[in-house]
Image (tube, rainbow, N blue to C red; front, side, top):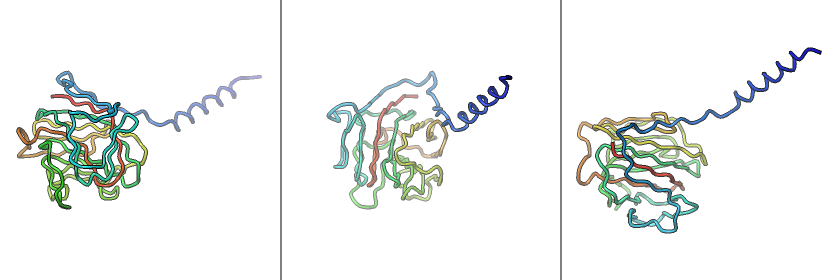
Length: 216
């Protein structure tokens, strides 16, 4: 008996399997000029002196930084960062609200004193406002100068790899290796008062891990 039909059947199965397989994620990589200056996998019991909390709503659980109900009271990294910087981390939103939020080029101490919080640096938001808006904002996340896009939406429980690159006044945000937004600032927030990174949150539960920061 000829084996051609069997071979064709196996080939069809292989094609079907490859069509159903999830595409591998591709991340952009730091260039030769990038120098790692900080790493944190949060695999410990205490947050430590490298971090400054500005309110309740955070915890270390299972080797991750978990935030929920921070209400714009960021968890600030105390290490001053250079103006040109690359920041990478993983984030998982646990609800359909999304609302993954971080700040960079901030003062390292600011937090909300009212419902109308104005940040000291740039704010990056994935799935804000009930998972309807992604944004890069300069200080005011409601400001008219913010850059926004409606897609992609946050998928609850999915691990996303964030890359934030700030160089020569331009801030780029990549998600799993794909650029989501960029923000070009004619008056960049640099120097003293704009040297810090923070994880932030409003109400949604979000997990952060595998933070790596490079000087560029």
